Amino acid sequence: MTTAVGSLIEELRRGLGMSQDQLASKLNELGDCTTMTRQLVSRWENGYRGRKPGAVWLRHLATALQVPLHALESADVIRRSFLTSVAATAIAPVATADLLAHGFAAALHGGPSLDDWQGRLHVYGQDYMSAGAMEIQRRLAADMVVLQRQVEGPQMWDVAARLSVLFAKTFPGTDAVRTTQWYGMAATAADRSGDPAARVWVRGRAAIALGYEGASLAVAERFADQALAIDTRPSLGRLNALMGKAHAAAIRGDRRAALQLNDDGWRVFERVASPANAQSDYAVPEWRMNVFSSLLLARLGEEKRAEHAQDQARALLPAALPRFATHLELHRGLMLARAGDRAGGATHARAALDALPADKQSLTLRLLLSEVEAV
Image (tube, rainbow, N blue to C red; front, side, top):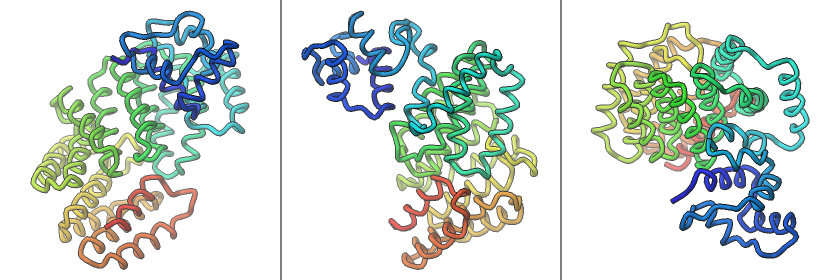
């Protein structure tokens, strides 16, 4: 059975782009020996027969994996390793100095307050709707290097959970290792907050993000089922979970389940809809709900209902959010392709994406284009 230390070793190794062979070689260099092998690294990571690295190897691992020794020694590994792979996972080496400067500057000044973090959470939710994935990823990584020092208490865990979800969304859903890792950490952080609303929202947001992208469907369904089981009361988290599960069902070919889940989602939406002028990743106003349904119905070949959802979304969509207008055009391309005009559908989708400035494009849009071209 995989141990907490084993999981952390694997997580950090992958974040640094190392193979098990490369880590073994690095450990041999540090230990001035030849006794470490890929098989031994694998046994540590998988917890084979309870195998764990001893004290000497822990010191070498801390050096090789670029983490403090206590991060590997502590029994509370999740707490001490939370977000330690940010720089290695997402940020190019050229940005390392900026990350370190940001972290040290915050440490010297005591770091942001809880109110500051909640304010940043609000800003990120708004900016995510229009900024490019790389910009959000760069900014978030810098802030999360600081945040990891301050994650204490339920409210800070709530902030960490919601920011981790956004960070996960800056990676394509097809990158299963990274997205699963970050959504998993977000769920763990939400659990630490003790707030059912946060626990449901984080899992629901992961489910709709992965289901909408059509990637890692098993993970999407697992998060959706967890969210639905935690709290049965209407909420945006529950709404996201239902729609994420609906998209997974549609892609798997379960038409009846997909349509039923879509109807269930709309019933929850009627209870918890966000204000029409809300422009945040943490909100679901009517135009956004129609975007969710538009793609779902396009995937199911429900042309008339999909067109109606697209018309409703366009009528309500704020002009400041052109990326979501592009989503609707890609849905239109998918409908054309599924109706038999594969070349026309792909051409329509590519033209729509090309018309959107590159710095406004998202990984999700590129995944949708690939889906249209694959019909």
